[in-house]
Image (cartoon, rainbow, N blue to C red; front, side, top):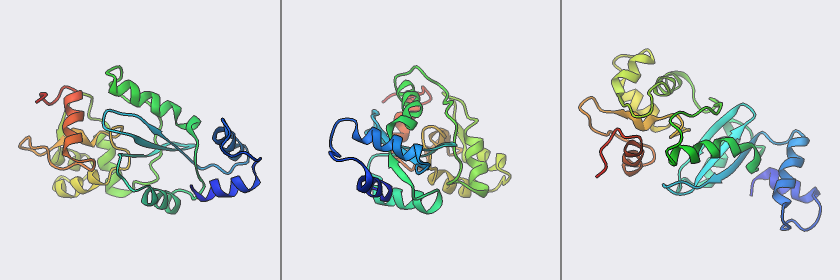
Length: 203
């Protein structure tokens, strides 16, 4: 439970476990201008993802296994401590993810909040966002596009800290020799995503 959830529960009506209470809590926070980061979970073939959005857009997408305490601390420190589980604001992101995993979507259209990405890393991820579904590129290419032709290793580090995997498709970036390289979600997930997109043969 986040700080804002605890605070709201002290002033909210009784019966906090009643159906619809969480939704009512989220609406009350939003109406009062207290909700800066909304989050909810989304089912996927790779397990339960956690989606975080701000009024500007998707700010963080977390794979299963990422410690929730660390996620909340990062967002509280770098975006806002006013974080609340609120499915409504995340609905569009979760729909697009569902369409992507179901094979009905090749490009994401949700707005993004770049608050967690700065400097060279932002340039790398913006270049990565231009790599289309079904295609792959190299660390050297995204480094050059970000203004540092010799910065392939730094580009790899930037991709490794991508706060919005899948939507910002760092899985489409490979070594120049075709090797997979690394991936923040693990190489099994990188293989899965590339296979889903048809850029890696299944098996």
